[in-house]
Image (spheres, rainbow, N blue to C red):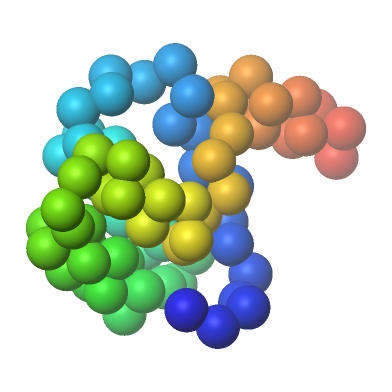
Length: 78
């Protein structure tokens, strides 16, 4: 993937099931107008060979963070 903007995605503290994480990351990408990237990411994850590889793919597309971190940033901009 090229060095595009990676949207922040609250995955820390979520259920670690890879399909759950993939869904959260995919929705984050789609909300940021990155439908093609969401599809590409999901395709790569479903073809990955391990959980660790799948997590690395997710982090290629989104900036993994916590819900608290996102909420703190939102408060700074208010």
